[in-house]
Image 1 (tube, rainbow, N blue to C red):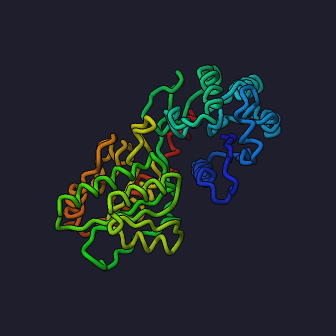
Image 2 (tube, one colour; image 1 turned 135 degrees about the vertical axis):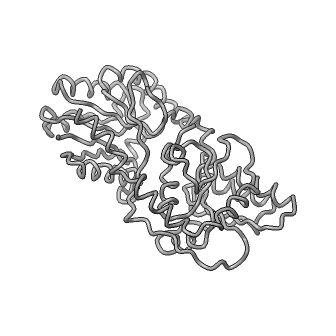
Image 3 (cartoon, rainbow, N blue to C red; image 1 turned 135 degrees about the horizontal axis):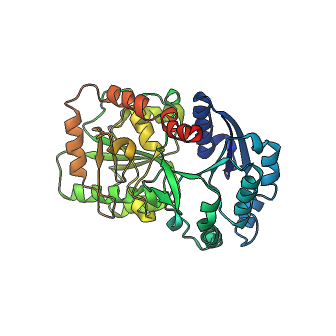
Length: 367
């Protein structure tokens, strides 16, 4: 079997792009399944592209996209896998030309986030959303299936293949349990923090918790940066929680591993409801699992929920404050089990790799 994997890069530094790293792992998994895959990456990181993609009738996908595909001999390809960028009239035209050139080719479209309209809430993004809404309901004429991380059976009248995100375990160092420096329970959240992370729910929960004069102390470490960073700092200051919430900033490599080693519970996304998402597939949760650190979350995730995964604690996917006492009880229950880290690592090896996740796509391509 032979095919093309087409994706777009919008990161100015491609070497550190999380999306590009994910694509590389997906392609490698397809190849390990015996599929001959040609990668095409279209760079959309230039400032000019950031402007032109918002012009109503300007081709967001690139004027020479179809010509570049023809050079790859699409007539002899069994499939083309496209990671969604912007769906506009030009993109539909490219799909039509592909189908005319290669009648039997299967076109697979990956939609990494769905629904996503609420994420484009800035005024500057409205032209893109207009282009999408004008075009995407015609995709069913050309797309054979949509790859989704959501729980939808159909998207835009197109049948889906449901997958979850995968990870490369070889690049994730297991957590080393270290002697505690204090009796505090350490929570850790590692992220480029946005409103969808919902860390404000946890901070408000900590405020409620300490108002009740608890015996157990709980501390929250925020690692990273992001657009919500300063808002969270203000929230901590207003609630006088500086002693219990620590902003660690960006950490990498050994420094980050050292923080993980000292932490007890990791924090997943708690605010997906803010963009209308019920089912997620967070890479960070998978990294937490591979490291062997129990975690909390609020969204549904098939990779854990369907298997009744026991090393997670789930809260409601809404605006309620997080009940810290439940996290304390969760931590205490885990102290009775000896091999938490080892069991979580084994679970990741069996259930959370890209080789496993891409199997359903390989089966569809070969059908």
